[in-house]
Amino acid sequence: MKKYLTIIKTYWQRGLTYRFTILAYRAGEMAEAVVLVLMWTAIYSDQNVIKGFTLPEMITYFLIGNLFSAATRNFLPGLMSRDIKDGGLSMFLLRPMSYFNFILSREIGRISFVTALSLVTNGLIILFFLNYFIFNFDIPYLLLIAIMISLAFIIELLISYIVGLVAFWTDEVDGLHSTFDKLKKLFSGGYFPISILPAIFVNVSYALPFAYSFFVPAQLYLKKIDLMAGARGIFVQIVWIIALYAISNWIWKKGLRRYEGVGI
Image (cartoon, rainbow, N blue to C red; front, side):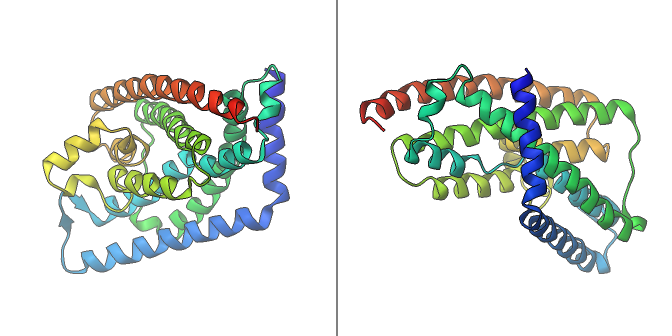
């Protein structure tokens, strides 16, 4: 356990070392949030409700959803691709710590640091649009959201891990990662609430894992869905985690045989 805590601490320190890069990402995140808020404010200029959302609900949806998204996002495929291509993976095959446990600890350290900063930056935006933001202090809802976001982090990690493992067979995974990232944003409700789309799209989104990193927890926060619906979502997440973990293990074993076979 101590070695995993050391890795988490190391990536907190690394975040503090690369302050400019971190701050640049946060500045872009704030700019995107402000643009979305101003865009929806203009859309609501001549109407009070759109597809069941008032303007304060829509603004809260994006501000709180962006925070959830920051807590689950990762850039793992590119890092894994370099490890595999440059032979950095080899040292993990000789150590007692597994490669997956290492990247899990690394991402927990990175995400916890990023999330802490996102709380600050989103807090500043919320203060600016305070009259439009809806606060939810209902403990059962907040606990359920916390569990859902934690599971969403694991799902995002497993998906990125699987995409990264493709580097065993190809030199480039950025294109595949970008495709998955755009699909995730669409089906998670990152562009707009998926409830404004046809019912078939909403049902497909609920069956996929992406909606539970943005749309569903944001809906829970706004109390547009109840705790029972949220609990069903957590069940879907657990099923996906089991399936993704099994798939990742299978691909890892296949890829590792190829990695060792070519003597990298």
